[in-house]
Every structure is written in structure tokens, then in C-alpha cells.
Length: 364
Image 1 (cartoon, rainbow, N blue to C red):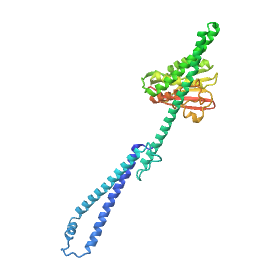
Image 2 (spheres, helix red, strand yellow; image 1 turned 90 degrees about the vertical axis):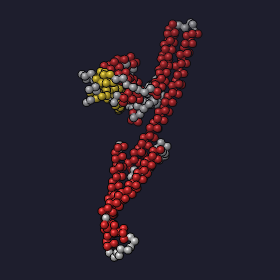
Image 3 (tube, rainbow, N blue to C red; image 1 turned 135 degrees about the horizontal axis):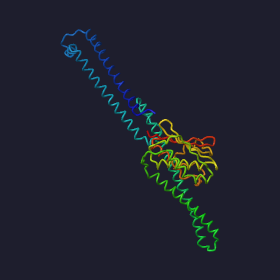
């Protein structure tokens, strides 16, 4: 994409080249008219009593002053013409900008503003795409809120039902009481998870992420995050291996928010890994960057979905099974945190293997 400075320079260059060409043309025309006039007037016999004779005589005696004066007058006329043209350019651009948001079709400007026309049409297309993405994200969020609100009823009904049984049925055996309590606790925890998803949606919309940086060992941060996930790995029989080099990989970061990035990536790997699979976490130095990869074996993510997984409220489980993922914010938040750290994050998926890669600047 051409920069605004390039476009401005190109238009001004074209504008002043035309002015220069017009000025040189004016000068050439004056000189030609002077010589032609001398030839024509020289062939005429003057008696001195003609009304125009004093003017002709003065011009003949002051040819340099006359040419210079006419040249200045020509420059003034050319300047006025091109000044009006420049104002018309501005007028066209301002009118196009006013209709940029609501106008249908492409922006069309007069000849000479081709670069501006292309730039504004590109901005218009980007604006329409952003509006469409925002509309889709808002619709996904609204659908998700409706789904979550509906899903809240199921665990809540179960909690109320089993607690009512325990309250009303005094003769229930200890074993059955234990079973009912275990089910009630499970449903209450599920209820808590759904409520947390509501809070996550609210926080993402209302909170501006700000970093509180300090120098951190990336190796230690990854070890701590993986250690906290061991109970989660055990539920699906997963193993997780951390592969790092000899260095500590020091980075300047907000450790709490960066841990959230790795937490989201590991949680995503757990959710979409095959039972009994292996999750690999690799950290290495690549030039001035630290590269962290989280790899898991599971169903290959289709290309069309791979390009959207970092969007707000987008979830891979199209069947909307709430147990398979949250509000669809984890990866969107991870991307924003990585961006604030001047890093990059992307995903690749093929042959039942998915790899998320994060690159962060190393502390120099």
C-alpha cells in the first residue's frame, strides 16, 4: 500500500510540473508574439499620427520591460488558474471523505487525483470489512450470551433438585448422599464457569489492557504455568514436555498478562487434544526474539477457521458445546497481549497437529 506521504508527493510533483510547463509555454508564446509582432509592425509604414503609435513606440524602446511585465502577468494568470484547480481538488477530496462511510460504490475523483482515488477506495473497502467483522463479532457475542443464559438453567436446576432431595429425603443412605453432593458440586462448578464467562465478556469490552513490565525468565514462567496445569492434563491422560535451551530467555514483559497468554494456549491445547496425547512446549532464541511454540495432536483445524480463531467470540466448536471451550475470547485476548508486547502470534494446523507460535522481543 502506498503511503500518504508518497501520494501527497506524487500529486504535488504532477501539479508543479504542469505549472512549470505552462509557465515555459507562456514564456515561449510571449517571445514568439514579440518576434511576430516586430515582423508585422516593421512591414507597416508609420507616420506618427496613429493612435496606437505611442504604445508601439514605447514597446519598441522598452522590449525587455514589456516582455518581463507580460511574463509576470502570465505567471499571475497561470497561478490563479492552478490555485482554483487546487481548491477544486481539495473540494473533491472533502466531498468524497464526507461520503466515505455511507456512499455506495467506489469513490471517483477528477483526473490528476488517481492516487488519492485508489487510496480512498482502499480505505473504504477496509472500513466496510471492519464494519462487517465488528457486526459479526457483535452477533457472535449476542448469540453466545443467549446460549450461556440458556445453559445456566441446566446446572442450576440440577443443583436445586439435588439439594431439595437432600433436604426432603431424610432417610437417604450416606452413599447416596455422597453421590448427590458430588453431583451438586460438579454442577455448581459448571455454573461458576458459565458465570465467569459472562464476566470475561464484560471485562474484555470494558477494560483497556495496560502493561506493568519487569524483566522475567521466560523459562521459569513456562515451567510454572505447566506445573499448574498438571491436574488438568491428568483429566485427559495428557503429558506435557517443555523443551528449552540453556539460556533463561529474559524478556521485558507483564508477567501476569503473559502467563495468561500461555494459560490460554495450554487450555486450548488440552481442549482439542486427543485423549492420552502429548503436548509439547518449545522455547528458543531466534535472533533478537524469543520463540515459544505450543504443539498438540488433535483434529486438524480447517484453513478457513484457522484464519479466524483469533477473532473475538469465535469458537472452533460450531456445535456450541459449552464444555468444549469458553466465550471465544481466550485467543483474542492472547493476541492483544502479545501485540502490546511488540510480538507476534499465529497458528498452523496440518496432519492432525496444531502449533501455536508466539514471538517476543528479548531483553537486550
